[in-house]
Image 1 (spheres, rainbow, N blue to C red):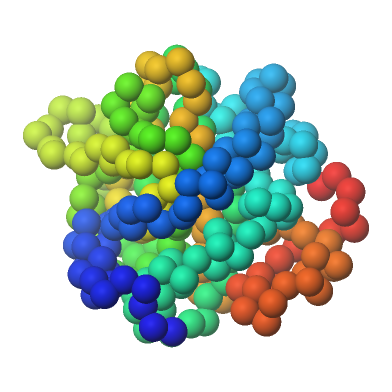
Image 2 (image 1 turned 90 degrees about the vertical axis):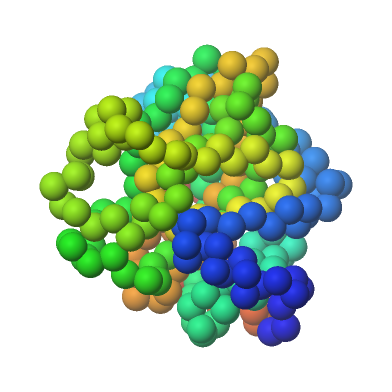
Length: 265
């Protein structure tokens, strides 16, 4: 596949060095607005339950409360979320082709993290366990593509990340990241992004959500892609009929989807 961006090598280099890279204006505004319109009722349903236990129907709002006023919501396989322009975005696929050097990967998770007004700081953390103690590997078997559905900035709790820490592999620091980062002298980055950007995240760099002090939620979709042998702890759910309707490319990307009968999961 030819890369839609002529600076793809630079983006991969940014990703390897910083643990993330950003593709600005990746999705058209009309599609982003449709995603936002479809997503907010799901978020509101999860917020209304305000439960720390995963609950709810996937089609109408399945998720849970994490940190105070911060909610995770799983995405149903329905338009506009199932639009190939979202899950098979050519720039995202070209990036992963270049990063992994192969096209053998799958979409194994479709979720979101959403700070509501009055949300608090998350603890500094990484999104996967340390699998190679004392060895910082160059490539990770899972990549996330994240799509902010509104402009993100300090007031509404934009994402914060400490670049380069994907290579940190000291087991003695696990469980102590928050204490160390708050006591020491470090230079995190705030990702203030325009809605419709797609930013690619290595799950290993230390990062955290920040307080939302605005009057609106800051929804962000997260698509998790993995090599076939890696279990991310997530899955995408769809019916057999929905799977049959996928293109050949879609069937390859969703080969590990959990096939349901269309009822509550």
